[in-house]
Length: 400
Image 1 (cartoon, rainbow, N blue to C red):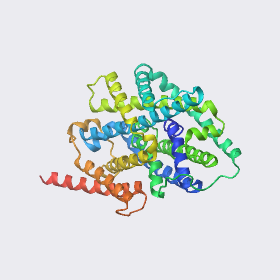
Image 2 (cartoon, helix red, strand yellow):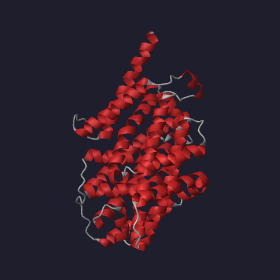
Image 3 (cartoon, helix red, strand yellow):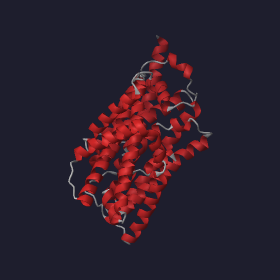
Image 4 (cartoon, rainbow, N blue to C red):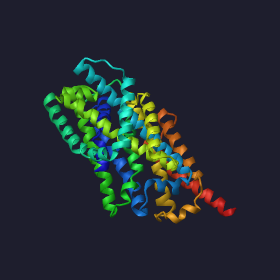
């Protein structure tokens, strides 16, 4: 339910809207199902790593990438969280600007609203994180009812749903699947944080398939359906057209606020993992400032590009540590006592990671052709590269 709740956040609705408007309903449904299936399978195998070893993901990364090499991963996660932070600040600022103009005839500057929201979120994270963390769970049932209501209103809004693209932006089938995978790939890589408490393999599989293939696919299809009914890809315009009125404004603002408090807290934890000597409140303030700067990049205007970028970065990571655990270690659990003997940097993992990212970009640019689905290509290339590099380096060390 923790992972499923992420699907009901506003960015999940935006993902469905943008892909639906770009591909049409039928094509987007195939994309959502295939993307959800890939996420679910990856989530199961990464989750099993956590179930067998009973270690959090940050510890697992040390075994795979090395004691210092894992810091590179921590930094990548922090950057990704800053990206999500920026997306939500953009969303809050645009909705607030529209609310002030339509409701009170007050014009405002986006940059000013972004700064104000950044300060509010930072202070809330320092002073009231535990309360908002509990409140965030209340958004799941509320957002579920909202999505159901959107579908209901969409059916009555237009009896004929247009199964054609309504957006000037176009994606290839492979790109669209990679975007869906990118929307949850960070959670997939971090699955051991949850599944280390899992009772058995069945529970691990359910905790992956239910949110990634079940709940998220439902949200994506519902939001695509609503967007095509209204012929809009803007979440606020869709909500207003379907009769949500002021509730739409309030919900979008509160959802962005609560989600960003969690994003900021998580990014601060990531920075603390890199250097545990930093004081928590100082890390949160620094993260808040950096996140607000990221918001100026207008990631919401390039939201699908952002998701595609996440898939490029993190799919190879999942492939590497699954290969390490299931193939190289033959499912032998990681042990804390092994940490002392670990290398500071696992060169094989870092090289395989960069090769996996490079191949994904080359496929996307059309320089090479494999499966035409970028995330699948990343897995197919990264897995054997990491395996053979690890074997070769191990053999050379044994000779020396």
